[in-house]
Image 1 (cartoon, rainbow, N blue to C red):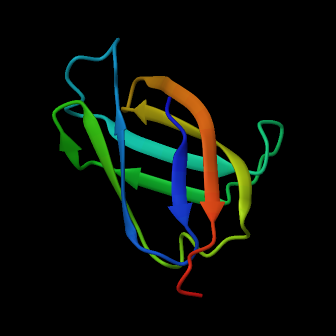
Image 2: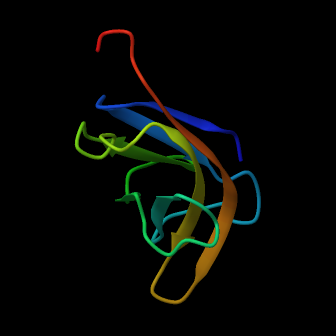
Length: 101
């Protein structure tokens, strides 16, 4: 999974793609969670979506979602249905400052 960069306090959409293993995400919900570390249990950011562009999940986020401390975090993209859960990837999420602050 590629690194994600979110500008602190901004809005936007994160696109996360299923590269293999699930050819049709119909009936699945995409989940994107961000934590301080892989060992942590508290989600800093917790997004869910049923908005798909083929095999790409579209996760809109608000300025409230991105109003967390700057830093390097771990993220996980997974999909779930009523019967299955598949981890698609784990990566790095950077929360960075903007020049407009």
